[in-house]
Amino acid sequence: MTNKAAQHNTTVALVEWHWMGHHPSYAVHLALAISNAGMDVVPFCANPADFQRRLNSSTDQSLKHSGKIHQAIQIQRAGSRIKWPRRLLPIGQAINHFGILGKQLRRWSQSNSRAIDQVFFCCIYDIDFEFFRYADPFFRFPWAGLYFNSRFFRLPGTRIPYQARISCPEKFFSLPSCTGVAVVDPQAVQAMQERIGANKRVILFPDFTDVSLDCATASTPSSLASKIRSFANGKPIISLVGHLQRTKGLLSFTRAACDSSMQDITFFLGGEINWQEISEPDKQWLLQKWEEKPNIFTHFQRLSSEVVLNQVIVESDIIYTAYRDFPNSSNILTKAALLQRPVVVSEGHLMAELVRDYQLGEVVRDDDLANICQTLRTMLQPGYFNQLSQRARWQDYTDLQSADRLPQAFKQLLAVR
Image (cartoon, helix red, strand yellow):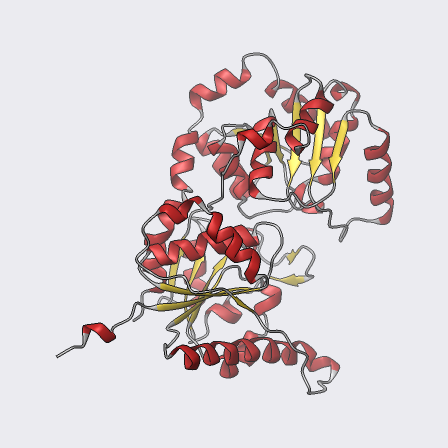
């Protein structure tokens, strides 16, 4: 006879090494979704205090979760005592990286008399997992993770920006310890399955986001949204926000702002800048134009919260997402659809497909300044927004990418065999 009192939910260790950009928000959403799927969650992250603060203030906390979320734990990092030869250093770092994590997970299991049934990595980057196969014997846990990269099949053979490596997900997802992978590109499901084998679960996740708004805060003079509104002084606002880098269209956005036909429009740049892969001449040109052009307003700091980012989107007339060399999805599309703001995206790849399918805005050639400026002016014409609103499938796209779909997706991905 089974002792029901001794039975436990499946226990999932949720791991997030990174704590910038959307990572903190994602970690909380994913933990809540796993809990709502009926599994217990043990969060291991780079900033446990911030995780707990975000978790406690989440509006999703009001939902009834059938799984427990344990206290978040600081991920340990330590230098290896082994002096690895230079050519073996990446392998040694991987062994050290995942070996320490494996030990930490086993210590938690021993201290709590609970087995960790599955490990879920909130965001898998190729650079972190490229040599995982050498560390796998030291890690010794079944695992799955969320993989946003679509380059391996949309731009095969091309190098990942800022990493100087070609995407090869089969190097780690085909390992026996991997039970499955979550992707956000619908076409990636079959492409990934073909690469890693039919015995692996490949599950489509929504490209979810946090759309919390605090209208009272947004209206205060000190808020970023209020500052943008005051700077614009009634002029239309086009915004490029998030982690600002070459692939996010920094150059084309600034060139459009400098065009003589666009001087009656406010261009807002908000977020931290990554100067990697931007040449020194381009960097100096950007800095000069941002300083001298009276229609450009900048806030080169990390936007303090998802609420602030959402307030900026609401304040904008157009969201600029004409990214370059960017085959992946972006949850800025999800935010824009939820908040009903038109977007402009680059021709080619997933984002253009989604914008056309759901009528979320317009598609431009990111290397054609005249096309970009003409499209932006058209989108700012009287009547454009009303016309777009009649055909835009904002609600359909919102439903497609809703975080409410995550618990069922996790049940499919993390079901213990």
